[in-house]
Image (cartoon, rainbow, N blue to C red; front, side, top):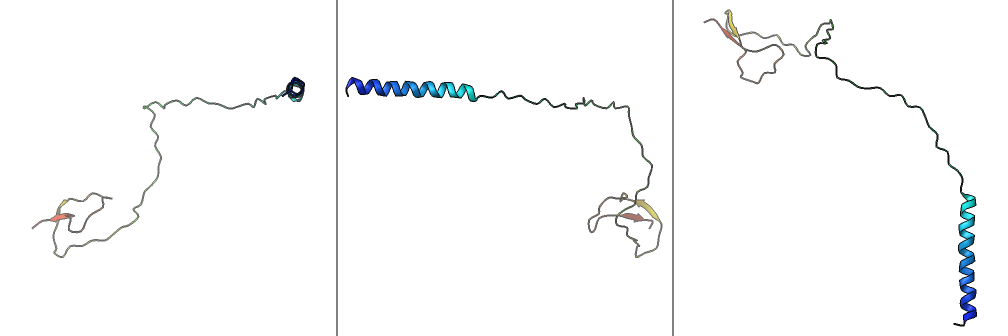
Length: 96
């Protein structure tokens, strides 16, 4: 390449770089961040001495009336109220 073409190309590149540099500085706008208020609170563990008591009644979801095939008095009631039972599990023992 002749030196005239090299100088024209380098001048063009220099002008292009200067144009990009100066136009970029003019187009920059200052961005202002909006600061929004935030509500905060500190979470603390409650003391173990605090006990809450509520009055009310409970009712079982399912109730069943059971009876035995033989008469007698119950001497031992093995099942606890609210405990699920399996088939064949001991519920109560009668006085022989």
